[in-house]
Every structure is written in structure tokens, then in C-alpha cells.
Image (cartoon, rainbow over all chains, first blue to last red; front, side):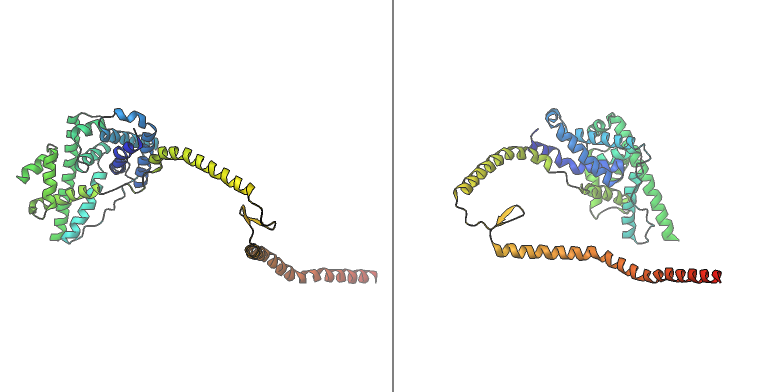
Length: 171
Length: 168
């Protein structure tokens, strides 16, 4: 693969890779390091990349594997806590919405790694189920099941949050 | 219609096109009050999509090949230039024997050299003054220690007196 091809096919995906790494590692600096590491590795193996059919899926899969290796190396307990703050609900409607939006990031971050990876690949990146299946080494059906579970969990939390806000307003 | 689509979405059964439709619905102002609570969810997805890698990916990766190609050319050009300069240096008559080397460069302008030297000497002066400061404090300590020297004189006198008294 030529350097120009590398630029268009790989470097253009760096933001997507960063978002995936950040979702798995739940840490901005670690995610940036992971992106750098992966791109360096891919650059070293650029001659073998011409045979890859779906570059996006291949890179996302490599990124996920690298992140999971990083977590394993740090014996799981080093997986850093969620950075989003859980702020007290604001009584005003607009503020409530903003608050809920930041809570939703937190809700997704608190899902198990597989579910948060799947929901983000689908709902943020807009990836096909077959691509997600390749990235996660699952069947498309298993991806669909995990996606459904993730969405249901978020929905339950949104409903509970809504009830809490309403109870506060009526008090 | 939207209720059914939302139910389908939460069951994980929607297609990408249907999900786009939902995203569009929640991005507009015409969201039904019963669906309002789901708006932040879709807004959060849109917000996350805007996140970009902060540290830029090293451009050196893509520049490496270019550098390799340029390296050989620049080496050849530098070689030719150096040879020409050497020939000129040998051929040209030497104008003056009074010169100084500053930072590896030959300087014939005596005025410039004098100014440069004065500047450097001033710098040395400042450095020396700074390094002499601790010595000044040593002097202060020595001066304060001077009264202690008289203590030994007192002791000598006491001893004399004691001897005399014993003798008597």
C-alpha cells in the first residue's frame, strides 16, 4: 500500500478508531495512545494491507483487539472509571435535557464492554450488523441480541430518570 | 407509526434506514411529547459522532517515502555545492590575515568581533558576579564568628590567673 493510499484508507478512519478505543478503555489519553499504536503497527504492515476487503471493519476489529489486550495487560482493575459527572437534575426543562444527555453517555459507558461497543458501532458509527459481527467475532444474530439488550437497558434507565425528574417537579 | 418504529428500535430490529429516520425525527422540533424523553438519547449519539482524535496522527508516517527520495537528491546537491565552495576558496586571494572564528564562521569585520567579544565578556562578568554571591555570605558568617575568637583569649587569661592563684 502506497503512502497516499494509507493516508486515505487508514488515517481517515482515525476519529472512528479513537471513538471505539475511548468507548472500550473509557479514557481519552489511553484511547489516543491506542490509536497511535495501531496506526504505527498498520504502517509497518502496510504491504500486507492490499488484500483486506473491508478496511473499516478490519481496522475496527484490530482496534478492539488492541484495546482488549491493553485492558488484559492492566489486569482489568486498571480500566479507568467513567469520567462523566453525575450532576443533580435541574428543574428547568432545557437543563433537564442537557443533564439527561450527559447521563446517557454515562449510562452507555456503564454497560458491559461488548454491549457498549455494539451500541456505539451501530448508533454512533452507523455500521451494518455484519460488520459489527466481524469486529466482535460474533454472529449477526448474537450482535442483534446484544444490541437489543443494550438499548433496553438504556431505555429502562431513561424511563427511571424521567420518573425521578417528574417526582421532583411535583414535590 | 413512530411508536412502532421506536419499539422495533429498542428490540434491535430496525434497519439502518429506519434508524436514520428516527434520528431525523428526533433532530427536528416536531417530536411528540410522549417521545420527548428519548430525544437526549439520539442527541447523545450525534454528539459522540463529533468527537475527534485530539493528538494528530504522526504525519511522518506518510512523509517517510518522500523523505527517502529527497534524501538522495539533496545529498548530491550538497556535494556539488561543497565542491564549488572549496574550489572558490582555493582560487580566491585571501583579503586579510586578521579574522576571528565565531560559531564556526570566519569573521573579518574587526568592529563586529570587538562588539561580540565585549558582549560575551559582559556575560562572563554577570555569571562571575552571580557565582561570587555565596562567597559574600561566607564573609558575613566569618565576621559574625569573630567575637568567638576573643573567647580563646579569655580562656588563656583565666588559665594564667588560675596558675598564679595555685602558686600562691
